[in-house]
Length: 247
Image 1: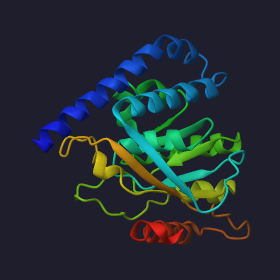
Image 2: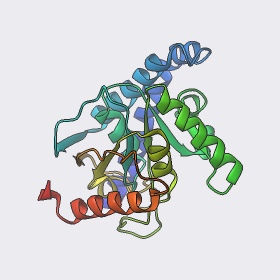
Image 3: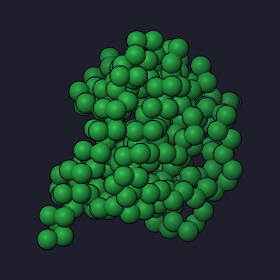
Image 4: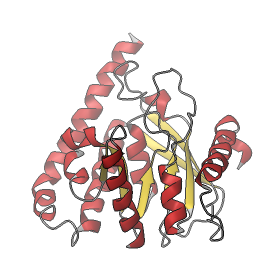
């Protein structure tokens, strides 16, 4: 009975997202014709869709900060990834426009497609050309003062319950090339509310707990140190996952 209820909640959640997105679609379609000019308006619509649909289904967020964050500074945000709810988490967390770097399959999803055709950056990690173009575009966005959000694990693992997987190097190359600070974000329990897309475990309303760690400033004198940078961020996030009270 419990699993059937969670499956029903999953369908209700998707319905909420579709309805809220549909209400905003006419305005979004108009703004998407000139994404550079309307970047922040498009991002604001995405935030509104995530916020309203989350509240309708009974999903809330509790955020703990290791230190005060200057959101006027562009960041490379690195977050662990266990659920499609992670997108809503980051949209709730970041108080201004930002861009996701995510899998190109999101270009074919009804809600995310417009955003990934305008303000977000699709990537096919199996294609070197696609990866190169995506990371170059991300570098350009950062140089324009935009924040980029990346899931450095590269996807959601098939193991349940999920654990933190090895990080790919792309986010850390961008940070080093552009001298942009990395902001590690630990999403503790989104998977327990909806693992991946909820096909296996369904959806459960409640509170998702998030930890925002201290920004990591890039050493301008270091070169080709992205692997060490990835290890540093991984260790900090893994420690926080094991001991949420450590911050």
